[in-house]
Image 1 (spheres, rainbow, N blue to C red):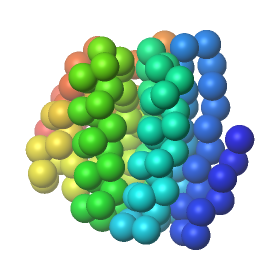
Image 2: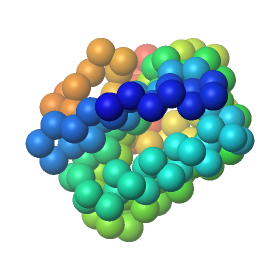
Image 3: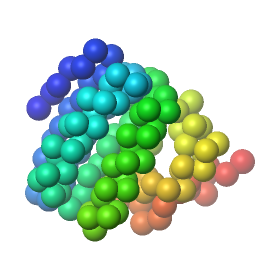
Image 4: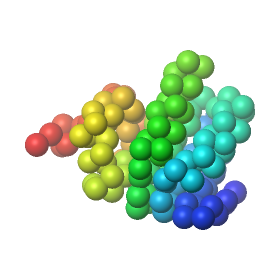
Length: 128
């Protein structure tokens, strides 16, 4: 399924007990509200794993970050897994500077759920 939203494209793929949400474009105040509603619909299905792919995002603001944090909190409270696919460097830097890179489980852009990182936070390659 593919849902175009003003400046954000949201693609959803379901595989077994996992749901993969690919975001492309700008995740800002307006689009964050739409994404929040979409994530809540997905969460009603109770997937074991929710992967949100940030690799094609071109912009992320505090509203988008808040949406991701809220989704992670809900997943943790429900005993489900949530992982993010790494964004481009300029957006990934936001997570690093705010220490949010330590909060989420991360996958590389070419990764699949079966290759999910077993740790939260940055990889050894991310240290400077």
